[in-house]
Length: 174
Image 1: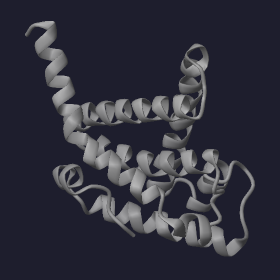
Image 2: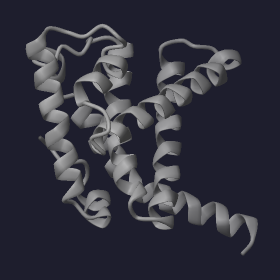
Image 3: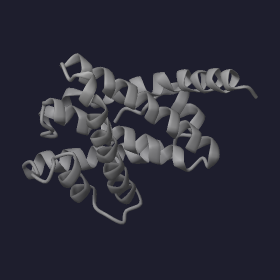
Image 4: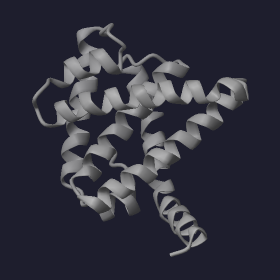
């Protein structure tokens, strides 16, 4: 397979995942996360919410073996492109965009580990969310309980959804 063939095949695979990524961002923008769940309605808070839901989708795709791993890579590439565009839109210059993207990828990796643990029940959702979604400063008990319950519901919905349906129908709504 030539380089161009591989490049276009990869782009085609990525195009198929754009609706899933868009549905993740849409779910992360749900006002309930910010009003009832106490997520900071800031650039950082919105990033943390997208990263949380993206992590859940990536963990779900991991179960699919090689095909899921390939889709996870493509979905992560879409996330990187989106974050790059968002940084440029808020005025971050070309010289330091890469550094910010590197920090975001590191943050995503940490969140992926934490949420993987919560999904596997080796860590509580409350602890994982306090460290990652709330950056170490838990909101009031009611808001934390709301977010933890919602994440549990989403994890169960993702668990019950086959990968093909996830890709075609998008991220489940709580």
